[in-house]
Amino acid sequence: MRLELTGRHVVVSPAIQRIVERKLARLERLLDHRALSAQVVLSKSKRLLRVDVTLHARGDRFLHGVGEASGWATAVTAATGKLAQQAEKVKGKLTNGRPARTRRT
Image (cartoon, rainbow, N blue to C red; front, top):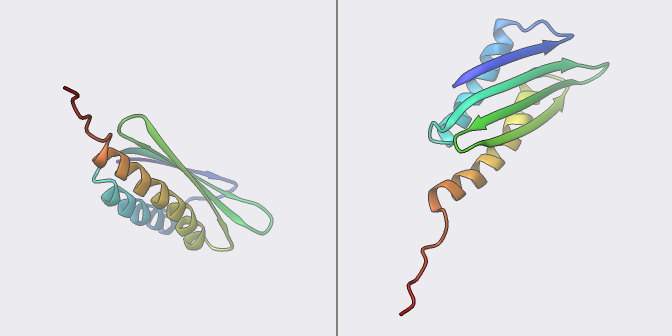
């Protein structure tokens, strides 16, 4: 999966990058490697740290999650938690699909 990491008013350190990569790897496993790319924007306000994650999966599906917290790890966990809920829903639709049509005679 291609990862694009952007920091707004933040210097993206290798430690923050490892946290983001580890959390996104979990999502990639959840989606059975259907994730194509992810854009992560790290921003800082007065009191909170904000993480915006947009994940592009196969089939033109876009998942978006936002997390705000006082620490980077907690904000990333909150954002990926929201993405995990969306991924479960998408995965169900991808694996189950439509119900089979019955033929009328």
